[in-house]
Length: 212
Image 1 (cartoon, rainbow, N blue to C red):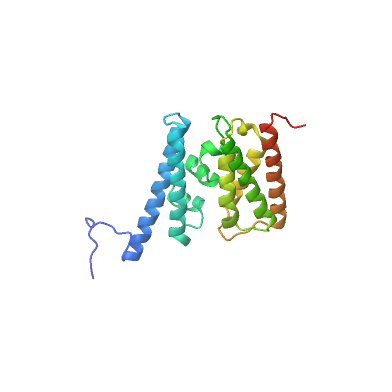
Image 2: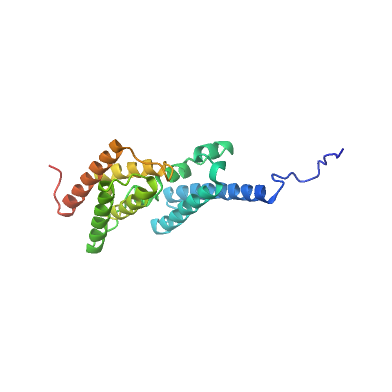
């Protein structure tokens, strides 16, 4: 009978597959911690928006990639953080939103160029057409809505538009779904209504008209 040496290093794995599993989980852990530090640094003005946005986008992209790789080992981000006693609320919020804070809360950068207007208009039309064509799955809608919200947030004053908060809310809803999950018919109709409202509000703001 073999004896256990107290000086021997404890191993989490016994084969290459298990080693790879724990390496992936460790990488995911590191991404969450890094994202939390980044969020706090941005809130404290330790970094600029220009530095924050690409770094946050990169970490969110890495997080999504890692989530696919770990598969069933991480049923949800909340479960993973609870399992390892992670206290990183800023990172959790950013992961749930799925876009940088500069997009979620808009920016005050201007001016609104003709190119921005054209690109955002096209994004609105593309997304509304997708809903009218009865696209319902997260992996069909989330990339288009994320592109729309990102473009929309570039406009000065958009943080005060009612449509922005509605679209960010839908982005959070889609972000929390599995890739194959679909919106219900009722959700789809409400989403189309909200985006159509945001589209009309967008053009009223450009023409300097307020809601009547």
